[in-house]
Image (cartoon, rainbow, N blue to C red):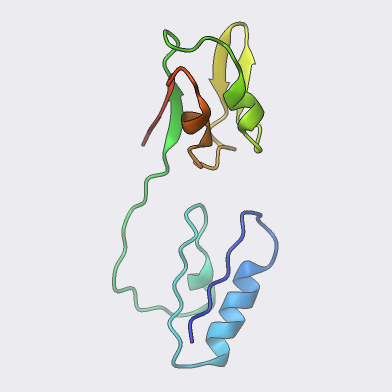
Length: 114
């Protein structure tokens, strides 16, 4: 059996549920893929077989291509984009790296970078 627990919201109890599920079955494999704050290791004494750095992509705007339509601002559910004084601003700490702003931009002014 394979069980995955996921959500976009912090503080919902994902770690609580997954740690207890893994603990209840000694033969289980626990993989904490939380990009921002993996903390499952705090509850176990893990043998780490493989560790990789992960880059989260963030949008970058080419001001020469942006016509100020604000479609990207309207699209972003996390309010990580704002259009102020004829310039697109990004609040990278609240960006969830979904790539939607890049896809929706009719001028192709937005690209993603590491």
